[in-house]
Image (cartoon, rainbow, N blue to C red):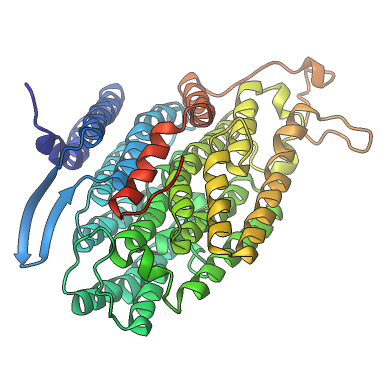
Length: 508
């Protein structure tokens, strides 16, 4: 049966939601339940890849689902920026599911059916956000994503998890209702429309102070972007199982946040208006402060997942800075960084989970020498660290390069310095972990990793890696970091297509 691209667009959003029901009904049969989850994710990947091909061939694909009032409608369409987000999420969903099978079984997690069901709802929400044709549609799925991931944050059912869940909902729903929704309503009254439009929807003679105030409301209201001071939900949510952390940091939640920031900046305000708004500079400095402060805090964390959480807050600031700089290079850098950071950070969290379920270690101070027991895991950690830092041969090199070029194009030397210092701090809090894991003995230190009683030295340690499915998943994503360095052209072309829509050129 040949499906039209319009049908594939609709099914990309409906399929994960239908899979939720199938997962719930097969919960008593774990193998069937997980087959449904992986099968659905692969079909979704097929649909999104077909939509990508249609976009490459210049086809216009859109669908109107429901219209409440003129200009207030639930509708979807494809464009390059949304396609980047959809591709990243659809590629990483089957890999994350594969990892989850190994992790959840090895860790003997409870409520696994609920986990996979909520995960599917979250992925349907992500597709809705990626393909949203207007602010109203995006907001609906943005909130569904928040609600569907709440049970995942509180998955363990402990008092700590419940407190984290309350903070999670409090910050994300609070910022949405107080700032984001108010920004959308204000936009409706000022611009007369909520449709995403090339070059923005505000008139050239719009009051700059009013438009700047709306921009502040948007940036503060998109709490999933975790800009300080609305960031505390992210480290608190690390109480969730590692596959959930991977979902929060790479596949769905935070990527939905920075994607929304980028979408609002490019298609609601437009690059020309952004560059003259009085509040843009303030927001740039706020994002720059988030980048630096989160990096400094990350250095002080001994818990591995906590360190990675603050690292994520810092990296999200990169995308926000690129969006607000509103230069050709910065938009390309921000768009590419959504994908580069996704592959790097999901690998780091996969490795953290593998270490937990295999070596039962969560503190960095306890991991010296661990590379001798888990060489594949720690090698993947090293590659992913290079991706986050922005060093070859990992994909983060390209996105950070374009972001730095964006600061040069706009003459933002203070921000360029902040990004450079942050990258150095990335080295300081990430690279020592794999280095100490592989080289535990130095002239001035003793190994802190406890050698098992039946071994006499580190050289006697036997290789003991994570379950096969989990190990395979983290190896694939680590390989993805390298592939994005070697062959970044498709991602670059999608990023530059965003500029071409806006009538801005970016020389290769």
